[in-house]
Length: 128
Image 1 (spheres, rainbow, N blue to C red):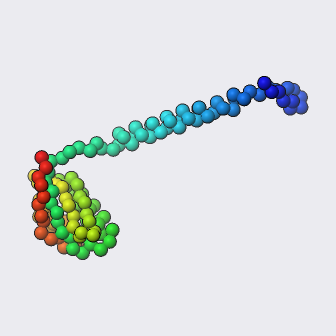
Image 2 (image 1 turned 120 degrees about the vertical axis):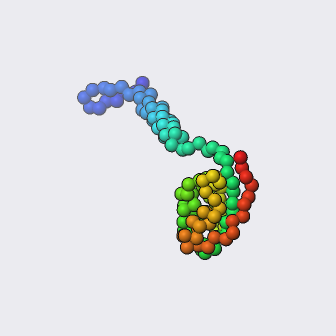
Image 3 (image 1 turned 45 degrees about the vertical axis):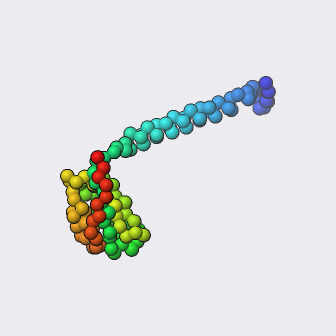
C-alpha cells in the first residue's frame, strides 16, 4: 500500500479503486445493448409465410433508382400486395400478391398511372 503526502496529511491509495469503473461500465453497456435489442425485436414484425400468387410485369420507362423506388413504393402500398421486387436492369417487377384482394390487371394499371408502361403480366407459381 502506498501513501502520499499531500502537504498536510497522509492519504492511502489503493490500486483497486480505479478499476471498479471498468466492470461497472461493462454492465451498463451490456444492459443498454440488451434493452436496445429487445426494443428492436419487439418492433420488427416476424416474417410469416403467406399464401398468394406471383406475377412478373415488364415495365418500360424506368431509367434510374428513383423510378425503381417509386414503382416499388406504389405497388407495396396496394391492398393485397405482399412482396415487390423491381429490377432496373431487367426492366420488370415481380410481385407476390393475394388474388382475393387484387389482380395482375390492377397492378399493371397502378404502374401505368405512374407514367410508366406496364407490359403483359406473366403468371408464376401459386404458393399455398
